[in-house]
Image (tube, rainbow, N blue to C red; front, side, top):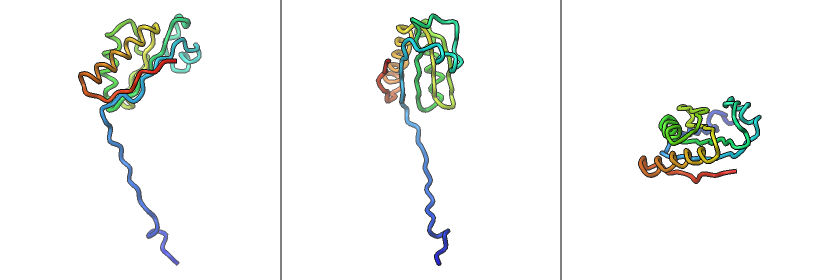
Length: 121
């Protein structure tokens, strides 16, 4: 009979965060329920509004991204998490798109991050 401890394999996984924006998306005209479930500003004109969401590593980058986004135009900072690297902004569709573009461009051109394309739906 074999010893079960000798047959077990131990696997150690470790992630190494790169400098990258892994996700950038603009949701144009999302349903009001999306705002409510995310805890975002409910006093918006939902017909012309948008939600922008991004994820980046290292996660502390969300602090820099939030600063760039709110300074780039008329957007509301809905959520910024320095522990997960998630950023959510809201505003008019053109303002949200412009803010995400500013963030992506700065991170790519100035900070040397690998960035994804901004998607829209």
